[in-house]
Length: 352
Image 1 (cartoon, rainbow, N blue to C red):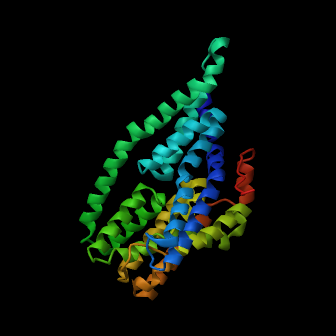
Image 2: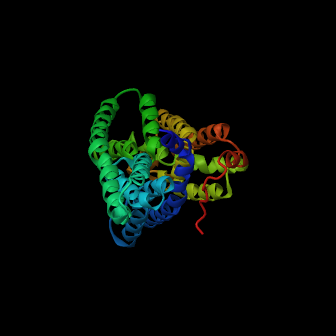
Image 3: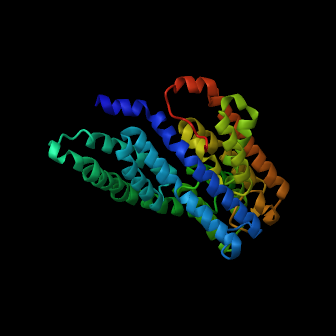
């Protein structure tokens, strides 16, 4: 029990190990996504030509994000034996739509599992089998199995319920619907809850209804733009690596890549995610109030030609990003103080 409590006490250290290895995949995938959307010029996922190829390359890089995050969380807890089970759990989390939050859970499940598997006492003649067979096989089966059999079904059911609820809300109070859109979009930034909101957006656009797509277009870009603004307004609260991530988040936000905010959320989820959700809810609700619409199911400034009431939409994005940045900077510690609190943590997120 004391050992488990020790792992939980060092949860931030383990989380940062995963984040530091995840960031290059997020940046590479996000930049390629942005380039593909810009080249396509239609504010939508390209399906033909060079832009589609770039999108596929970005998707390949982004596809490693959750497995890498989970794998290196497990690595931090259990050393090398935790890497394969952690990545397997992260892959399953990604495939069932659990997003980066599911990846974090999978990483800790794999890490704890392998940590205790390492303690199994075997005769010397069989000790070599522990690292070669027992830990990889049992670790992957337990960790990925929990994600697949235990967590997967509830998540699928929850997503169906959220979709039905959102559909029922579509004719209700516009401000409340805007708040829900913002909260869902910012909650996991590309994860299953975000995807429910986006799927609803796609469905309404396909049906020729554009009232939800306008606020959704604002909601998907507010979290990364808000974090980029936060690093600019209070640079002392962010490390040099986080400031660089802020520049990448600015580019991703402009073309509707919500995942640009994930490095900040994964680094400090309890402080950052609520601020992202509040700022996004404010911006999305304002976009609904100002009657903005969008004729494509995408977001960011790349779709501005498809937006009605563009001034109102821009105001909504700027207000949401400003609320996000102000709230985040109010609750975050200065970088030097945070580093002192986390002395000994492996938080190097450079690409070198």
